Image (cartoon, rainbow, N blue to C red; front, side):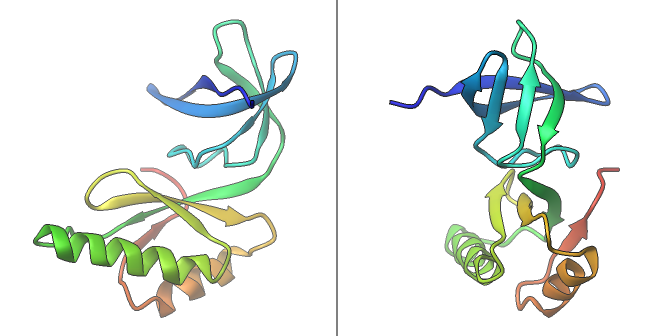
Length: 134
């Protein structure tokens, strides 16, 4: 059985819980898509005794953010999320929804910003791409 731990990541006064799978002494691999854009799913990180991430040892993916206009009605919202997930999956991009109008994306390390911007521009479900949080 693989153990899962809750790690803490602080960035600009914001504290996020990210799940990790321990690899050894104070080292873990991140197993979910963070909201913070300076770390990513699959990253190997070092953490301290309080389970706070100290540094990234090795990158697994890049993280980007998306924001869209909330959809009226539950069926429309779920349909939008499924269509968006299916579209991005074709490019090996995984998503995790944060709220009814925001999500984080796990983007392959070898994908250029230009390619990601092209995928977003050509996506039938319109959303704004964020490469840094404001």
